Image (cartoon, rainbow, N blue to C red):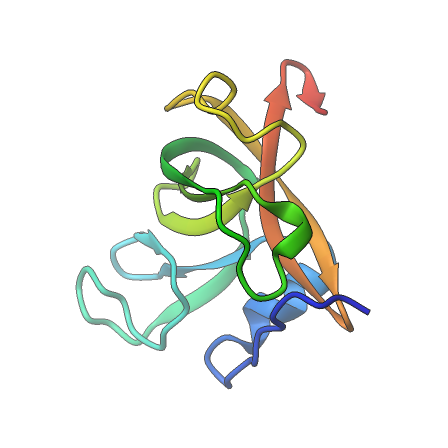
Length: 139
């Protein structure tokens, strides 16, 4: 059992969390304007249409921004320092996440570095986190 916070799905976010539990990063796309977006919502933030669909994202991203937190937080006591990051998905949307699989130092966290999604189990759920991608696959 994880001591880290566990998300509480809502009807709008349930398909996202179901995807994470299945090892898939699912985001939404607007059918009329083809804009992909994240965070989950029942309408397109670009054109306002409610004709939206879920799809499986590639899981590839680039590091857009981050901060290294050196102070332990609830559930993250053993993890400090840890990176709180914003990644830009290959499909366009940005999402907040953590970086794993590399020591969280400024030397290792280079802006625009390629990343790949992986999933961290928390109780019966999974949360998307990102790790450095390696050419020809992932780490």
